[in-house]
Amino acid sequence: MTRRKMFMRMITASLVRRRSRMVVALLAIAVGATILSGLVTIYYDIPRQMGAQFRNYGANMIFLALGSEADFNMDSVNEAVSHIDSSNLLGVTPFRYETVRIHEQPVVAAGTDMKSAQVTSPYWHIEGQWPDSDKEVLVGKKMAELLGLKEGDSFNVPFVVQEDPDSVLNLGIDMKVSGILDTGGSEEDYVYMHMADLEELAGATERLDVAELSVSAAQDELKAYAETISEKVDGVSASLVKRVTQSESTVLKKLQALVFIVTVVVLILTMICVANTMTAVVAERRKEIGLRKALGASDKGIIWEFMGEGLLLGGIGGLIGSFFGFAFAQFVSIHVFGSSITFQPLLLPVTIIVSIVVTGLACLMPVRNAMDIDPALVLKGE
Amino acid sequence: MSLLELKNISKIYGNLKALDDINLKVEKGEWVAIMGPSGSGKSTLMNIIGCMDKPSVGEVFLDGKDISKESARSLTEIRRDKIGLIFQQFHLINYLTAVENVMVAQYYHSMPDEEEALEALKRVGLGDRAKHLPSQLSGGEQQRVCIARALINHPEVILADEPTGNLDETNENIVLDIFRQLHEEGATLIVVTHDPEVGEVAERTVILEHGRIKSDKQNEDFGKQI
Image (tube, rainbow over all chains, first blue to last red; front, side, top):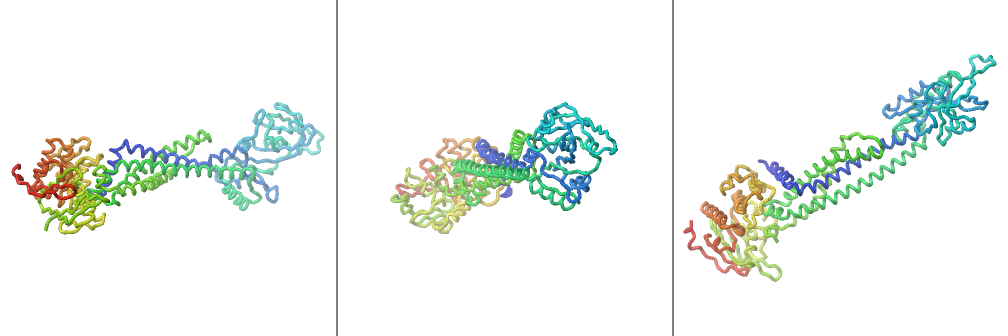
């Protein structure tokens, strides 16, 4: 039998046959590794989780016409969107604004894609329901008060551009209010209708005024997308909605800093806890250390044996902690953010290595102190 | 040249002289019992012979080499290579089996060899108890494992501290029989004991009192009991 095999036989025998003692140490390491691995998982998942939460505050990128407005249409928007990673793109909503007359008053009507608008503007509060079929509109709350409209009311909107300009009759289109839009913002000054209805009223041109996008990405990544699009797509100027992206960035940084500090504190507490446990483990084995010295073990040899046990414990604790840490992170994610997280394979070796290093450092001091044990005194039981 | 020679050894702790000018020679193959009441300096002498302590004054020659000025590290190496220790309280590692306890001594000395360790256990009558943990062995059996561990590296000197102190009469006789057998095979035995019966079976008895050698005599009945 080689010395290495005997070394492994001794340290595994110590862990397996002294399991009632070692379970305490293993528990300390595994709990530390669990919290550590869980917090690191949350730390790295916060941008994604919070990004999804922040998307409830509306679009974070807009496309505007650059140069000739005629060149800004769905084709150029689609070309610009192709530069954004599809897995990050939650929605694109085009808007075209025209002035129409309702109850003889000039009103700004916005033609849009209602389904996309629900994705990019989830914070819109509708009294009633989103327009489902043609000729149904959303009326902003202020505009509804001005025009005296409420949910379910019908009204006529004359054509802006008539097919026959010489005709005296302008029958327009009859529309129905499906809901009142309440946002507390400028959206309350508009009437929102399907793009096809606005084209029918104001003439079918492909021209757009603005496109709003909801993209799940960090501020730096969004900036990079915007720069690439502005550079590579003719007629499109991409910019960030700074009040959204900057708030996101600030909150994210603060949250990550908080989790980072908690992680470091947990790491230190784990090290203290493991060091305490290992000190107790070494203390109760003073006679064994004395015996090993009496049998001719060098200080270095004994340090390696105890460190070997500690490192093996660290590895096992880290492995257990990795899986429980993921379960912990999953629990937090589901209960706090309402969505699940995916297992990060890289975190498994990282947690194990960190646990081994922390346990190794925690073992070092008690084991070094154990080197002062005089075999003669210990073996006499003094 | 004697295997072990102590020249004018004293061990002083503050105002206390645990050993006072001890001179002692042990020849190769000798069986020496060191006896004396509590506080006579037996354990201090054993620690010095066993390279676990150094004298305050004097010289210790083991196999012709003065080891009294050696560093702690050198003493560990000498102890590992030349001395086999047997303890009153056995001091087996409680989570290792009997054979593994024997192999630990091999591990620190040279290379573990399970077959050889099993042979050592068979020699002390424990071939069938090799895979048992110390907690599953009787006191006598634990002491025999301790003896097998002390013998495994073929030491120059076997140093036993009260080897029968925790044993009943039956097991005491078993251990003394093993010592007789070792002596016949030429082993050098130094046994520290306060038990007159254990002292009487040795070839030579050295009696300590107040840190000095009170008497040093050959046992006239030695060999007759065998």
